[in-house]
Amino acid sequence: MKRTTKRNVDRLYKEATALTNDFSATFEQANLRLKNAFESHDAHIFGLTPYINNTWGVFFTLRHSKIGSICEQFVEVTATEWVMSIESVVERVMNIAECTINKIRTENQKQDELTIGFSIAPNIKNDFDRVKKLTRNEDSTIVSDAEKLLRRMRQTIFDFEAAADQAIEGQSLSLLDEYHLLFPSTCKAIIAFMSKIEPGA
Image 1 (cartoon, rainbow, N blue to C red):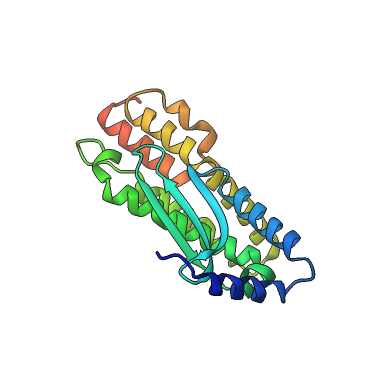
Image 2: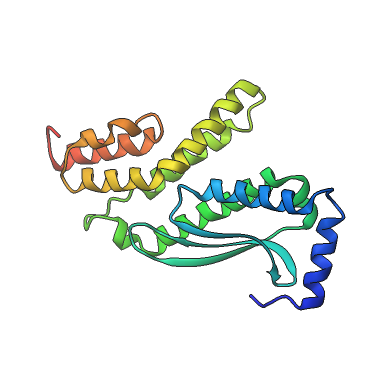
């Protein structure tokens, strides 16, 4: 990443200002929407900025709550995108953030697995993919419910991972009770795994 030149900063602000009657309010609302989307993630969101790579973009740092890995991300967007369609920008940025989490999780797999090789990462991905598929359904009611569920999953993912780790380490499987509807595939996999290594669990 490189710093944007002053000339290009002026140009980028001019482009965005021309697209809205109230630049300050639009800019503030867009950043608030991004901040709210990241609220449940272990991340620091710097928000929209014209100061990197001579373009508008969203800059954030993401830390996996369990292993502490830090990753800087800059997602390029156009002025038209964030002024006219901030929701699509938020969706794209959140998808990239989730991919980054999965990459961190994969690269540090030893931290997420028991020595016998059990990992919940594939099941978590399956649970997210299942709900994302529903957001493309033709039935608007199904789409609305799926979007609400997806937001709830994003809000609880790190709490769920912590509960899952505790359950796998031998604590009560009741720790998973509140997550069965959000992460059914993962919960079933954990229960099946624990029943093999601890019959009667």
